[in-house]
Amino acid sequence: MIRRFFAVLLVTAWFLPTSWANLPDFTQLISDNSPAVVKIRAVEQARERRRQQYPQDQMPDALREFFGQRNYGQRNAPKRKSAAMGSGFIISSDGYVLTNNHVIGEAGEISVRLNDRREYKATLVGADPRSDLALLKIDETGLPSLKLASAYNLKVGEWVVAIGSPFGLDYSASAGIVSAIGRSLPTARGEDYVPFIQTDVAINPGNSGGPLFNLDGEVVGINSQIYTRSGGSIGLSFAIPANVAAEVVEQLKDKGHVDRGWLGVYIQDVDKNLAESLGLEKPSGALIAQVEPDSPADEAKLEAGDVVIEFDGRKIIDASDLPHTVGTLAPGKKTTVLVIRKGKERKLGVTVGTRPGDGRAGTRDGLGDVLGLTIEDISEELQSKWRISGGVVVTKVAPNSAATNAGLEVGDVIVQLGYRTIADLADYQAVLEEMPSGTPVALRFFRRGRSVFRTIEID
Image 1 (cartoon, one colour):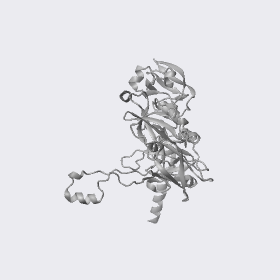
Image 2: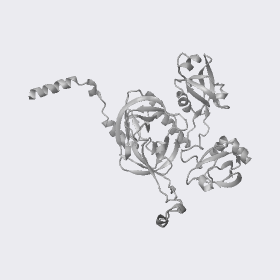
Image 3: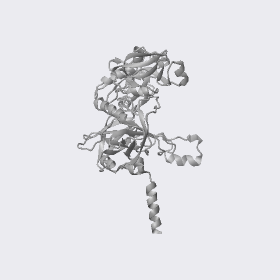
Image 4: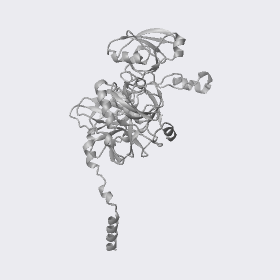
């Protein structure tokens, strides 16, 4: 009986795939890199909660006294703070920490906890909603740090490892493979600047902002999103490529915001029928559907109907490849674009512009710009109604901001900052870039058609 048992074991072992013996061992990688992975706790500003009111005259007599004793008629409940948890990692020994923008949200307080239980208050260096990245700084030196690799070297099928705090479970590790690269995931605003890495690594809420490693221990991505119907991992996770993060970090360190290349075109994919009608050998490239007036594309003589097949020396296979490519270029760079126009190739020179709204005026979703404002151009109807020429409309005011202190409200139309007239978003952006901190600046705006003067001060 014993002899037969060992014979079965030997036969089973002989038939096991030899590849099983070649599976990677992640223990050393996780041990070496976990000390630089951090847990982030972001506490949002206290907010008043609106209580639903029940009309007193419609309330039964038996209940009116009961609820009245409990101040049921009050409109506002006590202020409460909310906290969010996420992950991040140290990218330099002097305390710079990288995470997702959505992890910190509208936080007024941010704390960073290390693997060894040390905890620090963090300051926000800058954030970039378009790439969903934020750079923090803690006051410490000699810290363990991680290296950002070039994600261009990634291959589908390559092993990757994630470390983070899913559901608040500190420093959990999970592994999988790269499922695809260059995934296009437009934001709610329709912006598409990040060629995401898709993996089947188990990523869950709390992993956001944590690192994604290759087998050399380099960070190839920053875990950002999952696709799920249940709220947990189903094997579809997405990470921001490390090369995109490196460019964002450099600008956030230098100036606290990110300027992106801008072309000024509306594009779409090319299908089989369009390819045939436009004289293309195969359905590829980015078809220009519209060119914005006075944009870099307009100045370069690009036209609706052109199919971009190469930009700055990079092949454009899908329409999403174009914003991925243009967005990584520095504004002001002169380069070339190769298009198919009426069945023939044409190479044009183009100078990349700066996307409107980038810069100091666009810091973080939720918090708005440096004044705490989210704005948009005024409509012609409102200009005519209030008999004003130009301005920008306030669409959102962040709590505890310079704008709040100045008394600005949603619907106000700003027409002057300092000595400068604000005719549109470009004027507003230019003035905001030059505004001093700690000095009151004259502010003129219209509220319900009436002109109001105040002062506003950047803290």
